[in-house]
Length: 257
Ligand SMILES: Nc1ncnc2c1ncn2[C@@H]1O[C@H](COP(=O)(O)OP(=O)(O)OP(=O)(O)O)[C@@H](O)[C@H]1O
Image (cartoon, rainbow, N blue to C red; front, side, top):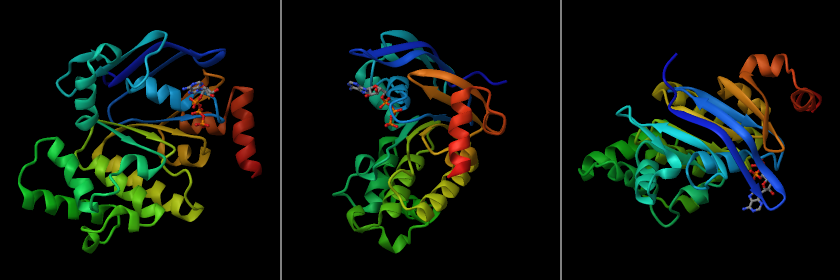
């Protein structure tokens, strides 16, 4: 198997008396999609924030292997180096498109900015790529000069995805990317994400409480409860033959719904 892109070991973190992460470890390989599932408060978002260097753990380590094959301990990197990674090799898709888009900048500008961050300078080329990416996420490119605030929730989320993927990051962290959208809009968005991620071969860490989204997108699943990984494995194995009572409960509650 390939060398992991991201390797985390022994992560612990408490907030006061709350244990948010309890000895969490994970490996993510290039091109792999891993879903982190669990009920509200189980530590999923905290784990994403620790893995991406936004929050330091009390113990444990996170190693990122960059495009040149060098390993970086994420929590020993300077803020500037982390910001650079976030603009280039990494991407973050937020639950709320408002957190991931610049609402006062046009749709094309939102996509083009990310290309400029990785060195693109030719205005015509940037605009053409922005238009192409709007089409890829099923937004009419005639709307390239519109502000995101006039878009529907689903369109804003698709624009956020175009902004993140246009620079072809190696690793994308997604925190409930379909949360807050209508069910029919969610299904369309999940399908779009699945196709783009497979086409581009991007590694994705997806935080979700939606088991159906995890089934559709992920190769592997980690189940978290009270800050611990209680079960992990290949998606079909975990969902069709859950071993831990908590996973059994999660899966049966979806089947019953
Ligand atoms: N900044 C903080 N200060 C204090 N407690 C926090 C903080 N961030 C998270 N927590 C607590 O840590 C635990 C894990 O929270 P986290 O947001 O990671 O869970 P989650 O699984 O992502 O939940 P949700 O699905 O609701 O977003 C919770 O008990 C939460 O209240």
